[in-house]
Amino acid sequence: MFKGLGGMGDMAKMMKAAKDMQEKMGQLQAELDSIVVTGEAGAGLVQARATAKGELTGLSIDPSILQASEKEVVEDLILAAIKDTQAKAKDRQADEQKRLLREMGLPENMDLPV
Image (cartoon, rainbow, N blue to C red; front, side, top):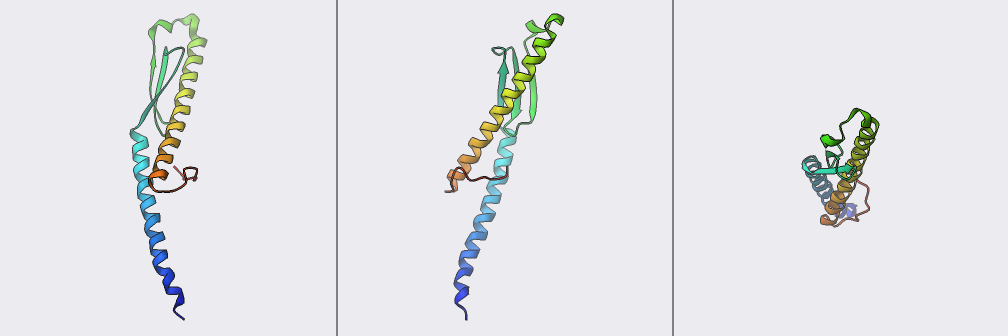
């Protein structure tokens, strides 16, 4: 009649593991806000900065390319720098998530909401 009670310890362990994972995910979210990645285009003439979450935080344009006749080129370089930054942010976020999963002894390819 009380055979099922042995599983209660396992359930408590699972609940603690879930809580630990939730806390570590919260820490990861905070870390991703503080990690800055930089993307560039035009051999560094345009640079964009973002958090590892992909939130753009800055843009730097070399003044030598700011000429009215080069407007379309500058716009293309800005878009390219932003896309490069977003790709780097996504990669960094994935790397940090894999690191967290490794530290927790879980498979690196486990899909977690970030």
